[in-house]
Image (cartoon, rainbow, N blue to C red; front, side, top):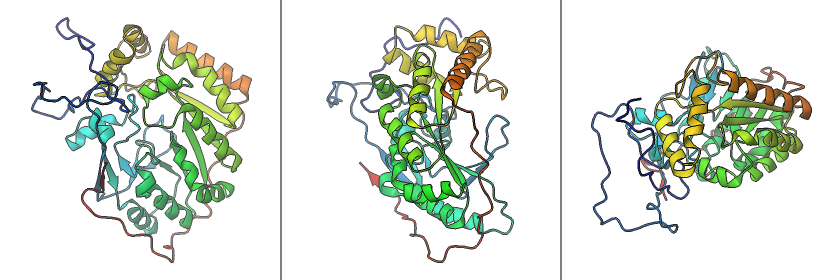
Length: 377
């Protein structure tokens, strides 16, 4: 970093109500540089007197494929499915934000306000599972962007994907911050009873005020705890993902989160240290400057302590947990709390592949909507 490039904006941007990012930072593939200029004509502001309210736009997308494969040694799955690109939850730390750069859009506000729905996802999945060459293995649902984000209430793409998996007896796991997963208990509970489904709920903090700016359109922490209890009572194995652990912001809450989740019925827990790949780093720094100016330098200093002096290190061996003395302390705190609370004493069993049926279901699924813009609200 040179002296001519400040780490934080001189005048931090004003946050938008209900949004995580405070800027619409250009993606790394953009050639032309653009700068917003206020000429005095934009007088419409939201009810808090900040920047104008930003509406969410949802576009339909005819995807060419639906199953993503990876060989990352630090990820416990090799196949994933994401019905949506972009996520209205607006989590400022989301590692998937940079993917909007591939669309020529911003990983900032565009990522959480311009959502692409893969309207043919159920049909693509059914076609894939019907192939003679298909080798069944557990699918991870909603890893990049939450499969039960707000637009799912109307579009029901995730519901239809689960219907396909249910009909075929195909196991999967899902991770979410949304209470909307409870809507699909009629499908999920029977699959869990057959050893075909398990869930994880992400909880970063129990502080509702921090959560409101950190992940503004996700369910509140207390509501997520209720979801853990609801899923557990339905017989679904539930783990909690404490991700990310942000030094001096969510980190002090780690043990309290684990205690609350254990009480709610979670049987397993894991954590991931804050990751800042690509455009996530400047977006997160802007967020810090806007919401935690008093501790921004301390937060980034501690992040670099765990990242070999950099904002981010993509090394497979360390990218999830960090390295160094502070990362070691976090690891010790987590394992000590897990032992005290009885978490991770028994691992969820391997998902059962024996019920998989390659033949297509008798009744066709509802055809995908193909209007170019599904909803603007």
